[in-house]
Image 1 (cartoon, helix red, strand yellow):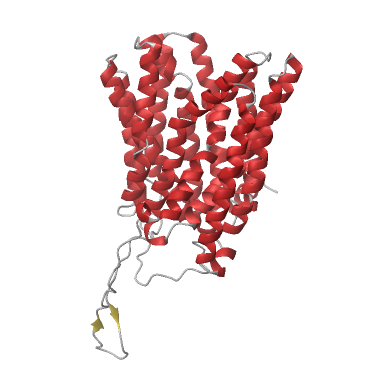
Image 2 (cartoon, rainbow, N blue to C red; image 1 turned 120 degrees about the vertical axis):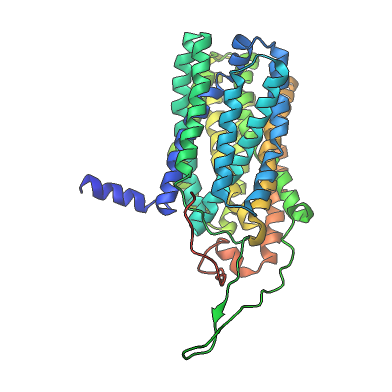
Length: 453
């Protein structure tokens, strides 16, 4: 098979067409830039701008808390304006805010610019997910699995390049990493300009259509059907409860990125250098396994079924962390490796289930608003997850199984919520992913998909 045929076959397996593939390049460039900067951010603020460790903690914590508002704000805007334009706005906002960090060492201004960046970052995550859902349709779970694999590859590439710059250790090296991240957002924005705006079920138009037959028949204007107010996620108690349970299930992120490195240093005999190796292992497993496993969550019912193995993986990871503190280098290394693998698979399974259920449970007329509310779960975990995980570490080895038990209770609650929600929508929704054009009624008068300019 020729190279062009192999490439065509690969392209055919990626949902979303040309714009779907372009968004994958955007994800790769975006995450590579983020990988450059994130590993060096705290060091930049201490070594280059001269902030104390306490000030850095306040800056990161407060800016992360401000970022929580980005998800619902972006979702609200996406139901009213073209999502590609809002994505570009978020990318440019991040580029400007990061570039502004180079202009000052004043704590107040650094906090302001970091908060503006965090607001756009959390909003961009929701917008990217919404774009993928609209462009890939019923294959959205497969597409987002591919996108997540590409994003992790970008993170790894950026992180490796960032590590080389950090080894140099000069102020110019840290500034170069920051500028590299700024450039990645500008390139991503330029590529997003070439992406088509996908059809949105929340923005409908009406137009005149001809009636009757024969020459000279005048067009009869269609009388618009009275529009009912769009669904409001803030008044949708089951969806809000679903979002709350999601915040707990995102804890694998805090355990992997914060808990395991601190646990290695403070509670085990494992070498400290194991921590970055386990992060590399996490990225490799996500890249290799996210897409193949995505087929197990292609419908709402199948996504709900993944909650049981998700909980099992999380519990195994917590148990392995307890074992790692029993003493001995080799036991610690082996147990920590098992913990990292188990928690990574919990992360993969939750990503699949969360993608499908967060969209499947949202009404079509307010997908952006609902996904914005759902984005609060990840944002809340980013702020509260590290606090909970550090509390578990302070409590000792037996606190990890307690955390695992909490996840089991959360999974049971979420499974019950989802079952009731899906059963209320009828059997067709249970069998087919929401958004499948084979089951959704077409909207009369929808315009052709325009190109973003």
